[in-house]
Length: 464
Image (spheres, rainbow, N blue to C red):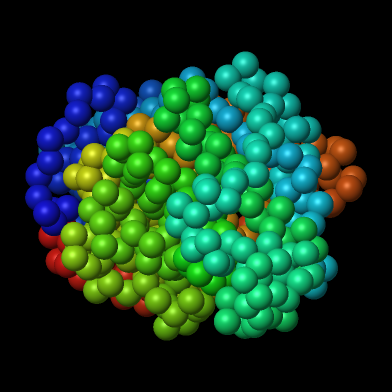
């Protein structure tokens, strides 16, 4: 069955219902917030805490929503001239999965994936008092067992990772291990001390989050060390050794759940997509920088799955210099209707923040405002939410972005000024960006025009 076909919808009072006559306006400066012609000059968007005041500049473009509270993440403006508001649920029981063991070992001091980003994120949240909220728990997860890793990885590969981690070169069956055969080498995927222990702990964090959700012990779980979405069944790729998103998803599928996976990392979520490419039990959606311009070079519009999974892999490739407005518009056009149609029991989101305009490894131009809008959208769309980390290679940006993410998950708003202790150790002043990406209007307009064409093709392919 193609996911375009109608499905029975459960009566969940919290689930957002997609209406083709409705446009979701996510927080943005102004441009392209609403598809189609600008509303009439006397049109007013309103909600309890949001107000749109039309100015001459806004009339020339579209609608400007000034977000004043984390509890009103976006306003719904219908073509029937009715303004509605979806508030995200600040009473979610939120779990933060963390232990110092996650940042004790890493890929090496010169590698972009620095475990320090996890340490800084934990410290920033702790200094904001986020973990003291009555609806928040911090849980130290166990490592994934070999059987749990084998939910998606081959037994041979699991043994290879363990042997290489210990400095060995031979398997128990006396097979000589060529590291390059399994994706390991001196570049993206170096062999490092305690590699097996560190990477299986990341997988254990994401799997623990899945179990807590399924058992009804929380409403949202954030495994911020997870999101290692490039790892394949039998080899490492793109800094990723074990594919924790796929492990958690497969475990939930085996419990009889339908799972939607939405990946907003700047890199295509190729490993997760590949592992579920032929099933209709998992919907994978990836928004990423166009594979023609960035690793892993995959994730094109017409890559839609195969066999029973045809139509259940969705790719939204975005050009370099895609800014908040264009990205959020594309997200809104594709993700909510697909999630509504698929009717997942759980949404797994990979929240890589290498989409930020200051990230050194990519060229998407989001700000923390745009990223926060994505977090808020997930909060409104997810019946149960397993949030994972992912990419992000600017040590100033990653802790701030993931702190904002957990604020949304747990219903907390943090002061914009960074805590004094954190500033003294790491520098910086503000939690939220106070600068814009250095993009010309010509670049923004070019990307906007091309993105409209791409989104139209995605809609055609997936019958939206």
